[in-house]
Length: 527
Image (cartoon, rainbow, N blue to C red; front, top):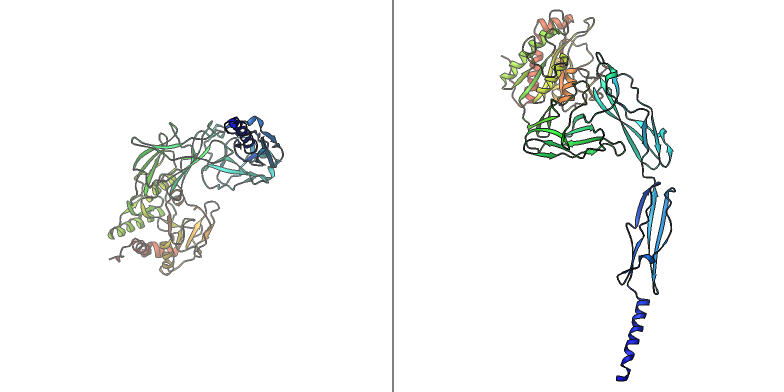
């Protein structure tokens, strides 16, 4: 047996050779993904595959079969194959070439469009081109503009292709209330970096703006001496660079005064072409947030609490006499009614704020160059923001003195549930007034068309109201203001019953009872 020991090595070599030939440890893996999606005309980079046998790299032995043409949409198959001994391994890569890019929208000129309220808007001409389909200008659509809102809008212009890709171009539109004294040639054609829109939606502060010469802001911060809070930022468009949006909730924010920063720079508010439609202070979640724009954007955050039960706007004042009645100026009758109502509310333990308690206004908030109506409206919103109910006392007149009776004017977006007091009073007024010839008891008036919408059927139409003392508080402070027109004081019947015979006190008592009971207190009849 010993003389055959040398045969072991040849036999072992044969066995190993057979095993290597027929059962090699051959592995093949593609580099990258086995399923790739490419855009039309996007470069396809062949990443090949890795092959090993018994751990040794033999990738140079891999044979690649198949090609990808990204100029033609479709599905492509690339096959990788390697052989060793009697064994072959193969894997496949699927490449899908699709139209993934949205069209590119190009305006005939890039600048801010300036216009007046309700004035015809001359937008640039827009064209749209798609890398795959070519000219898709016919797909362009522009969102309807709200021409009532003074300030800077971002008007979306959309284009689409047959693959469902949608592009958006945001056209800046600046709406003035008047161009008097403004040299339109001096208005900037380009937006600067800053905030152009701020509004409250679903208990969040929505901030929109533009970052000039920056693809997108990396982050927005609320900064004070104690903390730096990253509030995040999202691009408003994946196509058009620079526009940004952020949404801030305040419920968990520590009380204090913050400034708004992007990166390490203050962010300024630039959207108020006229300084009316700025947030003043807003009830956001469980916080009261106040805004200042003196040096950047400053936000003061505090726990919300009502300061007043009722805020009352006393219509007109100073040299503005309002409607001229047969025996009284509206300015003076508004004051008499409001002082009486304030006194009666206080007898019920309620806290009341009056915008004026004499002929003139003691103070008005706002910028120095605001006209008085805007100052009055802004001041009403500032105090109304911390009041449970806010209303305005006025009295009516018409051209010939033929109309008689009351009117109740309400904010268009208010629901019937939110206007429970007003609808109650509408029914009571029908029994209190001896004569009503007006067709409108509760209505919304549009400041767009000045048309009135009867609310008795609950039908809501207008988004805003015509009167500044309702419009500004609603848009700047989120305050629902109701205007009561007590009577037509240039009508002989109303002058006799309402003014001279103190019918207004009966009307005021109905209002007092309705608000007192709505505030959960027991009404105390007048002595």
